[in-house]
Image (cartoon, rainbow, N blue to C red; front, side, top):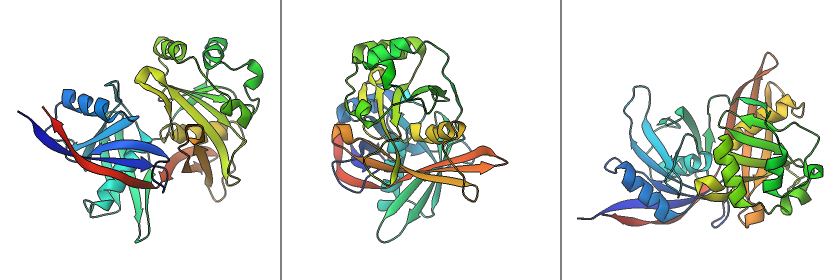
Length: 299
């Protein structure tokens, strides 16, 4: 026996269809099993598909889960959360400008700035950790197919709390020319328990942007993620530690860009709040656009 489930596709960190990062979203996933969510994520075949169910823990409004096309459930996904917040507001399912999600990675508050013209969704995750990467870097560079000269000197490679490896790139041309050996990169990711490989340049395409990044997650069924909200929660901590951000009035704000190499340009607004000379809070914001709505059959 089959039933139909309402589903949407939303492009996040953009205002133009067919750009930014596409996410599948199921707003009424309460009756779905884990196996059914995995099958739907595989069928959608976008970086992540988000599933919203009723909250089961006090202090939370909704439960939010994310699955990759390979069937893996992940602890934190930024773009699919922006897509979910946008869709909840667009469909009139929110009565206030803040929602607290219960996720695999813990509590995730999301703020929404809604006007007649636009919806801006702000992720407010717990402050990410960011520590120097101590394992050997040459095998990673070999898998990425870049030389040691392609690594920038403006920061040290670092590992985030989500186990994303941040590597400074010497310039935009290094990012443009990247052609990783995805099989080798996937093996390294599994062996070293690295979630994703992020290369970041201080040289950008948009003069209003501070950084440009590319992000690879082949062992999760995502060779390259177009625009990655979760890693941009850790990047401002990394930049602060590298002496590259200044907090005006206690807040460092900047725009980041990603996705151009895939023909899906996206922009993220990033805030690092500083107290007593230390990072205290991060926010990652962006807009989204709904590009597809329909139903999917579940056996």
